[in-house]
Image 1 (cartoon, one colour):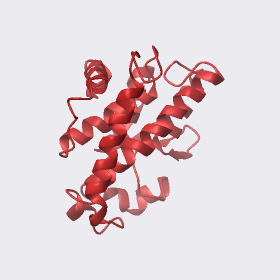
Image 2 (tube, rainbow, N blue to C red):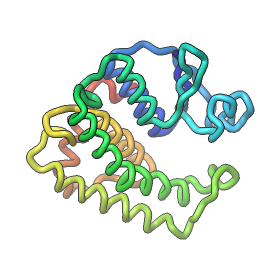
Image 3 (cartoon, rainbow, N blue to C red):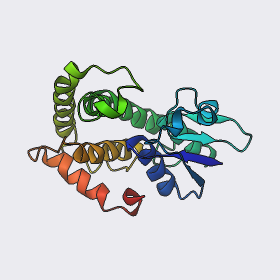
Length: 203
């Protein structure tokens, strides 16, 4: 298998997940900044022109970060990262969906519509007037999650999971584009620091 990789929080999620699973995959860099992801070679792999994309051993391609991670976890026989039984997998996917909708999407679009406008203006439909509200929505989502973390070691209780990886990677990205963590969210800060110390966080 090959992972087509680039900069940004989405590839970071998959790289970190692969590291936590203990897999050794070939990594192929795609130059997002130069627009290589919009050229025909990559559009054959992923018609949306997005990254990361996973090339399977049979030559097929799959994309979307949770789908890639789900696939890799399943072919490894299921781990605690997504869940060893149906209940645990449902719990992980529930929190991933919440983090995606409440934090990751508004945070990322808030950046694209503002600081990232010049880079993305010819690649995506942008709504610059929505940027400030999206950033507020992301911060409200983070504060909401802070309350949900009370008394927990990780998002899914005492089990480190893909939900934690996704949260960390997007919070880490937010900190680099002016969406810093509110220090009042002590549970989020503690979890962020806990994950930051894992070797996989630096991949």
